[in-house]
Length: 167
Image (cartoon, rainbow, N blue to C red; front, side, top):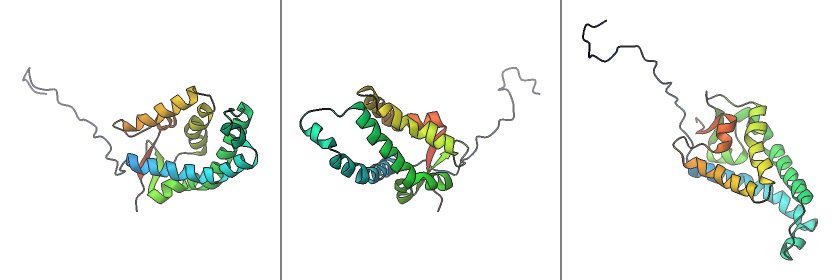
């Protein structure tokens, strides 16, 4: 210990863990989300067409809450069928795989099923079914990506981040 009264205190600081994981760019995340959405739309839009979902919309009639929930559940089921195995084994959706990015928890490990479906993706699905408020929440969720950590609200709730996949 120093006898110097005005010297800065000496202590052993723990160095921050140097994560070799580079955060995914905002653009790569956006493109991956658009690709994932396109895959879901390829199935849900024809279903909406053949079930008369567009008839009411073109006449200015809002689809019923039940209809929206059924179509939303169909979209979620398609998402899980297409991406479930990839998410659990690699932390990727098809869109993320194409863009070379993946979802990890804050320790850099692959998130479990509960983290993926309940905490991360339920934030997309459930609020989105609430008219106006759901769309507002979804918009705010997306805006969070412009923060320093490039994480959306669903990332914070699930304790995840999206990083560039190592080659």
